[in-house]
Image (cartoon, rainbow, N blue to C red; front, side):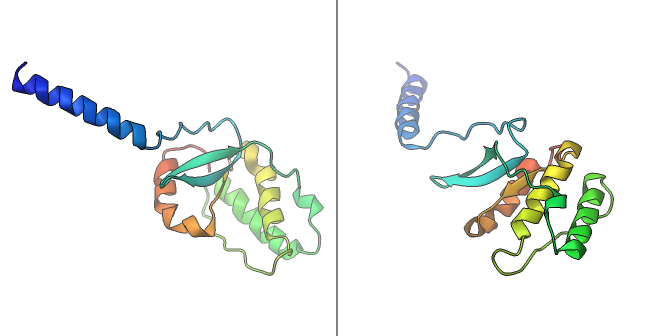
Length: 140
């Protein structure tokens, strides 16, 4: 056995040992499985997990937030139509309808290509990786 063969044999053995302790590569994202996704981390690796069942709330179900609802809906409509739109930051006390408003917009515009990715506040530093992951996707 020459030196190259010895090296390759040792390299294969080393790779086999490494593969035994490394986490498996995340599965490819099934973009057709859902309109909403969660950014998950497992053993230091991030991946998008489909959320197949989301709330069925509609914009019409939301009351006493007409001004905010109108602004968000108009901005979202412009966004899915690839027209100028703003980033949105919703603030307010718990229970004031922030999440419901977002879910209602998703339901209203999912068929137009709108998608939702939920990111835990502890994982916000991964936003660059998430943007890289979805940058070539046609959905909004």
